[in-house]
Amino acid sequence: MTATSPTSPSGRAGHGTGPRAASGSGPTAVPPTGLPLPVVLAGARGHGSWHLDNIRRLQDKGLVRLAGVCELTPLTEAELAGRHVEQSADFGALLDSTGAALAVICTPIPTHTDLALTAAGRGVHLLLEKPPAPSYAEFRRMADGVAAAGTVCQIGFQSLGSGAVPAVRKLIGEGALGRVTGIGGAGAWARDEAYYRRAPWAGKRRLNGVDVVDGVLTNPLAHILATALALDGSSRAEDVTDIRTELLRANDIESDDTSCVRLTTARGRITVAATLCAEQPGEPYVLVHGTGGRITFWYKQDRILLQRSGRGPEEIEYGRTDLLENLVEHLTTGAALLVPPESTGAFMKVVEAIRRAPDPVALPPDAWRLLPGERRRVVRGVDGFVAAAADTLALYSELGASWALPKEVSTR
Image (cartoon, rainbow, N blue to C red; front, side):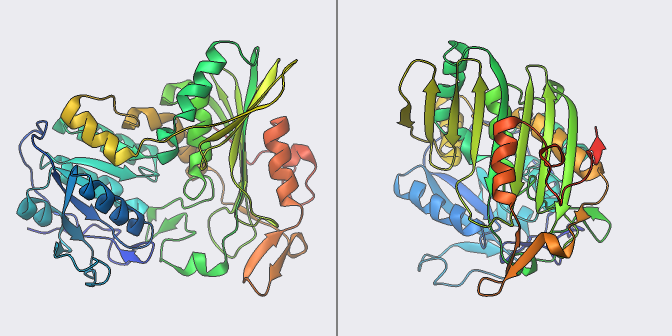
């Protein structure tokens, strides 16, 4: 019997619609044998098209085989590049009929847990897009259910596949920066008004009574938070002891598009600031501060700048391990899994704090302007405040932003 996910009928992943999750239970997962491994992609449009291309890349390497695509509206022959692939809107049935060993889930955020458990119940291992869930309770339901089924789950924080992450951790451990005094993160991106019309759940905190939490720090720039936590060595839920948030919005949405958070961890302090209303959009980065230097990590470029007292600056580029490829290697050779669910527990505690915080405050009309040619809203001076927050570990309000709140809007 096919059961439609309560959040998927009108939900979309990018331009694609969410598939239906089917009930059913299968055998406990065992490591698959023999390459290529058959994989089903759930959510193949919008960002899912990146996964489709990546699966094709790994297919050409003989690691996987695209066995099925799950979309409410089937992909066209052009979208499939002329290849014949089984398609269905029934995720569970498609997993059964294709004999899938792997599933890639890139669907609306509220559907993640049910679809992950549908796969796990059939012994199918999975790559689950970030954020893994819209609430900590749903995250735990997913992670515990996957573990109970004996399946393997990789969370799609691709930045954590960067070789720069262990390299920076090693530099910190060797004392290259002296004592670490804090970690900052900055993301100044731009999204036009159409971005919030691309799907019914876009820019929502809730939809039809179900949590979505599609804010700047929980979805489009979630990698900043996850990467900062990883560099701090504070990726598990119990590593975060306090969270303060300032959630604001310039756009006519429910969720936040200009926000900052400050985290207290067992090791120190992390402040991350981000906006989708930048005046001059740039590459997001994480900044590690130390008594003897600092490291700037542009995670999308796998590039760091190491600056130390008494030495010239060093710029280093690293390689990156694809997370689906790592999942295949983990299952077939025993390679270490890079982003298991538990390593995103701290990130999910931040998502929960943002979910439970008061609704984001609308910025006054004089705090932003509309760029007519681009049809996007720009917050005046926000680029400088985002950079200053990462540099000083201060929140917007503490930096004196005229449009910021007088104090943190929540403490969790």
